[in-house]
Image (cartoon, rainbow, N blue to C red; front, side, top):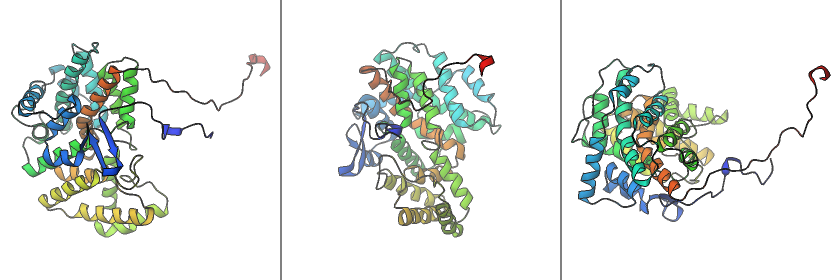
Length: 374
């Protein structure tokens, strides 16, 4: 391959953003200049969502207004609820997530209005309604009644309520909030770049987010948290972990949940998520997955000098919370809608069609021969 071809756009800076940045000097991911570790400890998820969408942290009045807007927009139409209920039960929840956002685009009165005000209204509606649709499928495919959203509940509390009919302890809710904060935004990752590329043609926000969900589904991106849990399920017990990981490395198999295009010495989000993984493990009185986690992590660092990314502790944390493995990435969607929406609006504000070049490496110029001459 030619040196002037940057496969995967590796090292190519394609635009500017004010939304997030990885800062190696403080070993942190920052949102609008705030270290994500600090946001996790001092803020609820709604505060961080407001920050990503509005560029500043809210005061009490603005946060109350923002939460009220989310509560008022949580209900989905009867049409969408029926569509979700009749989706094949074998459907992957990421395909459901992609479809429900697309349907929302059909129903939204502002679909074709790309003004800043309209895009913010649509972003709020997509952010508020998507958890309701995802939770509806979570229950419908199990043959259970769909639970409508409930007012006066926070974002995370309401999602648990719609999925399970009850709200867990404050410690579990905090751990879930932290996972959403850590997943909310991460610069020009592949799904965000997909959203910006779609937006650059002046398409609408529903189309851009639908495309981003399709991109996030892949195991090299958002689907990695699912893959981590599948891996842990294969290992089964801590006593098997050392043999399993060494065998996988000897066979040169890919070990999911490790390595990152941006972080070379460890994902800065991992220590925070690992802390809450340990808290949830203690609450659930489950040491099995934590022991597997520690063994696999140690071997990967020792043998390959490769560190875990945030998906590695998040997968088993969601499992212990009671979520089905194939719902892990849709939970990622619920959070990342904020980052995607912010990038979509940023792209609209200073748009230029994204249209890179390719280097042709196929057959040289050939002439077409008549059929009876071939």
